[in-house]
Length: 350
Image (tube, rainbow, N blue to C red; front, side, top):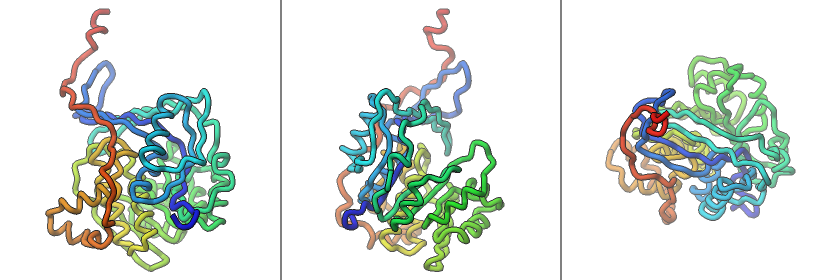
């Protein structure tokens, strides 16, 4: 905490996530596939909240919970287990908590979601937002009123943006970067919004609009420019076996904010964020896959590759003396039989 100010201010839509992994191929109509793994936990904006809190940042979340099992479960995990401040959040009667089934296949996943428009908007939840050191936000086509208020009260805004289902990629959205300290899109989004043909070219355009521009590149790592310090960095991805990519971008953002609040050089900020995102994809789910200091510390102590150890040598002076207790990762079922069958037995009787 910096006085009474939270380190991170967040708002957005919460989901209950059910993640299925271990598929050799996507499902097709009329076929039943037994997956080899399954996990569950809070998702959506919870991905950012948990990732930030596990790095020791005081985190304040404004979201809506349904008055159902899924909402109660997510509230218990976020507040009771992860220590996220929910004083700005509300529980809505007779409103179902959105539920997402994530089917992970290869390095990506497909999402199936059931939900309704929340009864409280972000602007209603935030009102006059409290002063915070940073806010992690997801930019949308329609600007949110609370964002301008947060920027005006001295909060540093770190923003990302999502996939545009219309594929129009309106450049007007980039006007909101005038309120932001940093922008962290992935390369597909960055190239689409800037009308460029490479991550580096997109970075060049974005660096003229926002003090700190970052473009994540998945398996190719990330590139960034800090116009305040004059630094440029290009770091490779961490070599890991991807189990579930859900929430990796959120973990990247939370880790980048953590390192930025610590005043680290740009290359270290970027490497740390790439590391955290890489560790998160080795576990089920989004929120509860976040490694936090505990996961980073365990990875560092087990590291044997001399080249990787040199690249991340700065962690020797950055890791806290006490990285915290062991983390509660997403509940995972025992491995299921690896079979692919036709119609269920009950269906064969008809």
